[in-house]
Image (cartoon, rainbow, N blue to C red; front, top):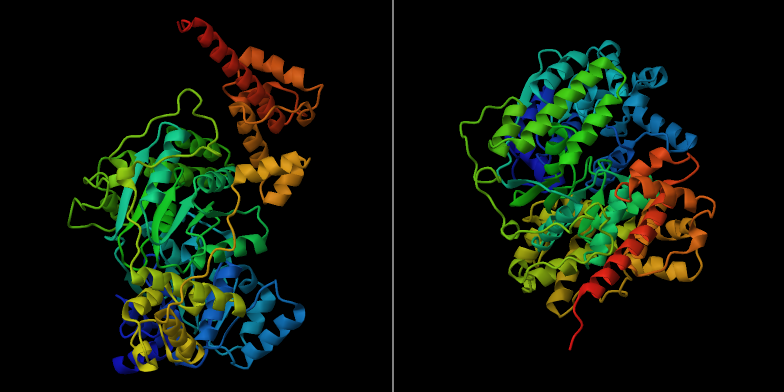
Length: 639
């Protein structure tokens, strides 16, 4: 197959005029029937490397992927491009699964997505022998290695592929694998003399900034500055716990920054809704646990901010690497506290398996050295993955002299009560650091086309990026095509996408030229604390408030405790069992109110942490009022 043939298909279906680095070579290897192992950073275009050969082969590529949502997005995206693809998973009815399997056996699909669990079953392996399989593509292949940062035992069973399909090629794809993990991938999948493609781990458009924070108050101030100093694009904030996710979302909302959360205790529909609001640019900031991000196809992420130490360099590289996929300058900010290392060590000590404990300690040593080292951050990442750069400094990390404007002015601790949660605390950004708001016509057009994209994606029930990539939207607003021929020249617009949306896009651009702008907001959303106070005044219980606000009970109680401690509301005796209040107060008398977690260890098991938090808040408020009265008496009277 000639380069012209490959480029023709690339332009027709994907809307691109050229390949990214390594893509064409990987495609050629797979078309020629070779096993391959591909290590390519997030955003490097791995999925195209197996999707294009599937299109060319006229057979079916079986794609193994760990996330149902990711598989569904990719299948929908391919369908929009005119490439028949499907997903086979447990969320489908038995009738839908049977129909999908019959169509796959008939060769109706170019790509079929399966989970590793399903692929490993004897029934699936037997059925796959009736499918015209071109090759197997293993996505997130590092999950097969015990030395990988996301080891999944079910991936180990993929070694069955070689014995059951000895004549079918196998392709392994990952964004983050050390030399040891790469060797493990080759061995576990029994790849035969594979073509190996390892892209550079150096992402020069990413600016790494690592800052140790003395407490949570300082950390939140840095977070606010980082967000407000990034006027364009989307932001991901990684939080270590579900409670911190909800707390951070509420704190950002209190400071006028719309944000949504994402964590494992949300139901799937809520997670999907929040993710789509963020993906479609309805909300700029998403705060999530590590459950968020795998397979996210968002090019315009301008900052990824971590609020705790990741468990490994691999995890950090993968999560931080979700910034700047469009090649534009983007910030990767790691705000950690000394206690993070103690917490990681605590969890490692809970691991029962000695071999896994050893691997966890090795990851711990590497990430600890990374944040405390005075060596170039970019170079440390490259050498960790087995790459030896020819340079020693990068000018794109804090060690090599990079200091963003928002970090040049110091922040101060909130004082002795730094453990206090940040909900409802308003942080002012120094005027010198406020970013200039974009008010150009191109910015207005970009917002208008984002709204158009949101509306279309809702009507069709697909993700916004499936309608139009971020990079395509930006190019569209810059070039402002007036004909379908001009639209074809914009990257990301293949023939099927132009057939589906071309006339609508041109009409939307014409409406904008005629004076149309984004619609007015439906209304001002009340702040989290106001919502909680209103529900309290309506007589709602904490549990009812948690349900109505979509929060964990502990988050609601902590927010109320903050209000009590600040004197915004009075403590209500009905919140805590009357028999337990004196027991908690006695424990506070012995141990003080500094550490509620320490109080929990000495109190009866039936006393909840929420009850302790509320009583502690009342006692702290009383201590504060008493001190204020004492100070007032000491001050000389005015004459």
